[in-house]
Image (tube, rainbow, N blue to C red; front, side, top):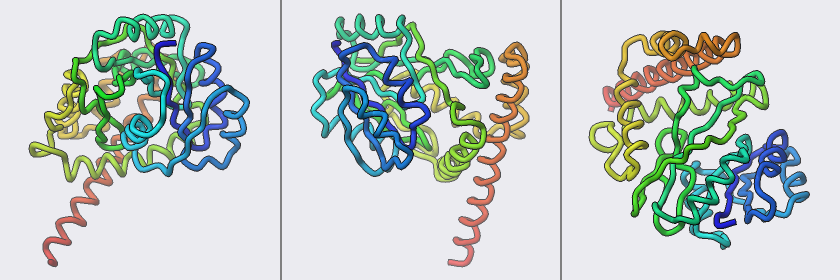
Length: 278
């Protein structure tokens, strides 16, 4: 294989086996764990992969640390989470593009599954993220609770084939717990912003990544955004065609938006009060 794989884990016993089994045989794979206590590493040790451990700081921090520290066998590194899987078509495309070596990074789309159904419409498929990067030529930057592409010296390509994302594989309760934390990160991003008055800075080398971040900045300021998001996903993006799982997914997205904006309003109030009393 002309590429290596990095998988981030923390208590992913429910997912990691499926993820590892989706990789081509013989793939140079490293699992970077951040303190799992649920048997994740016991499952990992049943596979011919390497294990590294590091306390979690951020997604970009974990991925960049791994690239800088771990001795991968290949310069091309595919970055995965434990609840993500490769398809046969994507495996073939990955081998082809890394062999051609035309860019420094590639964007991949994901097929999001909820209640055993691909949420094709409401998930805004295809939504692209930088996941295939060449060591020494591309790096991640942290924005909110996720990462963006911060550098790509020879430009960015886009893969045709998606990977499968089982984001709800551990149930809605787990999703709500994780997104309670994510909403806090997003609230801080909205209130404190990044470079250029809250707009993502020019360091985001990927045009697609940069455009997505700028559109996100604009969308953050839409009045009644939770309701608008539900209507946009369910009606405009045809989430109604995704059946009952599509309706439930759209409601969860609206709830996440509402929680984020509520926390942002609270944070602004605390910040304003602090300045007033200083």
